[in-house]
Length: 138
Image (cartoon, rainbow, N blue to C red):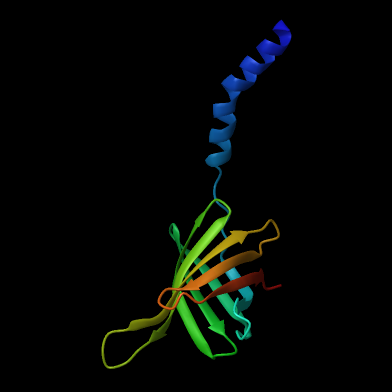
């Protein structure tokens, strides 16, 4: 019984060091080119596909995605936290005035061990939402 208590006490003393080491690990750089596939959750929503480019810029990412179906390029910023990657992205239109984003989206992904990202998106104004996957290009 005493051996068991000593073992538990030692494990309890070491736990803060183990979790600190795990949390201080450098985050994985997910920069690269990806194949994008997604679909809104409504029955009348069409599937879409395209490409995305993620480029680390300090603690953030520059994000650019081209939707092959709408022929639009969406750009924005992203950030990683653990195995999550979140982006704010929009369709950048340039006109007579300063650039303006139209159709802002929030996308939250989970980064898998194989480098793919699976997530959910929501349109800021309408509430439309769906699923999206980014798969690293080979």
